[in-house]
Image 1 (cartoon, rainbow, N blue to C red):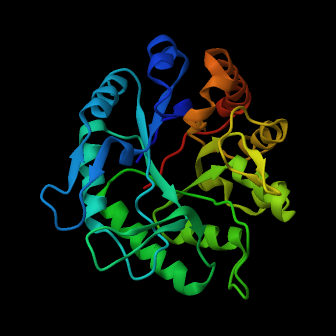
Image 2: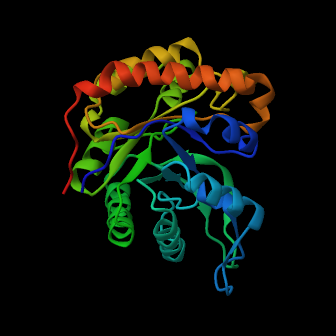
Length: 301
């Protein structure tokens, strides 16, 4: 399956409609969180997934103008003894309508199943233990996702604040084995690497050197801020200089990269404004154009 180069995109949020009406031509694609566009009435409800008309109207407007990719938050691939196959099939229906170029989620768990129709949401993406049991479990889920939705599926690296003891693998060894043995690619979040470097003393460039960069199809960039002694992945405005430096380093090593996505939380739009958004897109395009023409076309069976 060939996956086309897209270029530079932005993660959609509620502050963007007016910006997109004026500046959508600056973007090569839009990444959406599909869960934003409908409400989940709970397992066993008919219909379970109800579209939100105003949000769907904006999605249709975007889809007529630029390619779309999907960044899910609802798979919770790391939740043990839990897998919402109905959710995956609904994602397939969305893909049939909007023809996503690829889709992704986080290598983490977010949902805790309950006896009721709604799951408990942890409120934060919690990294999985890097052990053999989890590798097998996640691999099986990846196989189901790819059998159901026939487009590339990517998993994103996480921010972490504590480490599990006595793990079987390092994070990069775990991810490399997962993507080599199963039909899965990598969404490399550059800002998450920066967060872990500040909070945990991790070496972001060493992480990139150890990762199977041929499997990286998308990168995320963002800004953050300090809170109670931690640096947070809060998507708080423009990218810091260290993120641009890491992005340049990572892109130079990613021959199959298909897109770079800028993320910001809608509450920081007053800080960025149109000019600030255009500047982040311009800087990302500079890095993209510096490297992407040097890389061979990507094709995966």
